[in-house]
Image (tube, rainbow, N blue to C red; front, side, top):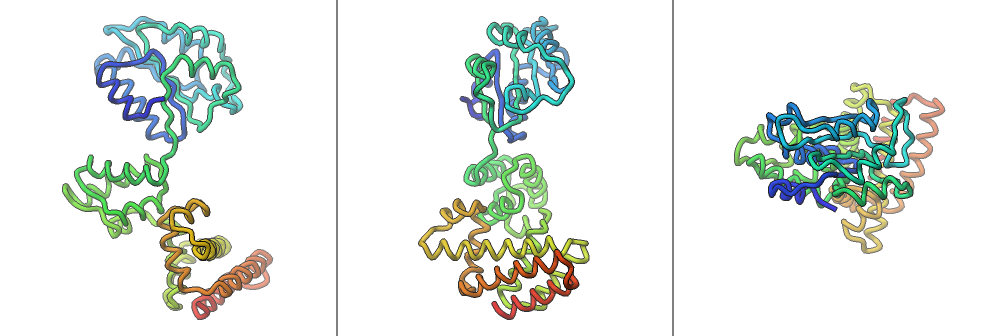
Amino acid sequence: MLSVETLKKKIKNNESSSVYLIWGTEIYLAEEAIQTITGLLSPDEKDFNLSVHNLDEISVQEIIEDAETMPFLGDRRVVVIKNANFLTAAKDKSKIEHDFKVFEKYIQNPAEFTTLVIVVPHEKLDERKKIVKLVKAQSEMIQVSELSNDTAEKWLHKEASNLEVSIDGEAVQLLLSRLGTRMAVLAKEMEKMALFVGVNGVITKETVDTLVARTLEDDVFALVDHVVHKRTEQALRSFYDLMKQNQEPIQIHALITRQFRMINGVKELQKKGYGEKQIASSLKLHPYAVKLAAKHANRFQEVFLRECLNEFAETDYKLKTGQMDKTLLLELEIVKLSQGS
């Protein structure tokens, strides 16, 4: 199985295969792999000898016919098949009639002048299918799964270097906690921040906070931070700001509850001697979120946290049954939390 980086090296050394299978949910990496393979053609050759097909819109037998067509004004053709969902357990919802026997026959004896690229935008292939085993046996495989946090951190530092800037550790953590590890989204934000700080500039936590859009969860975290530090007035102001944005009180309350459950979970695992990485893995959280929750956990007694969670359940019931004005209910809860913390 090839990584995208290994694929680039092979293509650079003019080492290519007749069939490539690219599968996984990280679209950015999939597109990078496709662009690398299509780089086998010069810009002029691409006009005549590059075909990109969507299997939801065209039959597989028509694609194979294209793959068997001699190249025009060049020595090679590259044919890309997108959405090859027949290699997964997903049901085919299109009305296109496919003759996969034609595909199987081609895979076993591909045209020497064509590079066929099969793209499957799913995390898993259906290994039970005979056709999957056949494709895997006859192709170079490239899996493009979503990055882990550690891999994403390394990628961000590398991307910063490519953009002629640097990014500090706290900025990386905040960026990943805010956006996750989706590379296409991260790449756009990195480009924007690199333009902002300029060549040889440093992307800091403040840069991320200024330029990367905050989520509702970020705003609720800020509210909880005010509560934890007994800043009642600021906590209420944060709440009123959210209400001005037409956020639903039930959703705000659900996120406050989630934050306190996180704090409680972190505190319990700390008591058992777990480190931050172990806690992040156990609670399925980003390490940066665990780091911040750990700071909050130190300011609460376990008994108080359990009482909070019980009261949250009661407030949730009142919110959903309309026993009291929603805004007033949350105002009272925020005041009680800040004074009790």
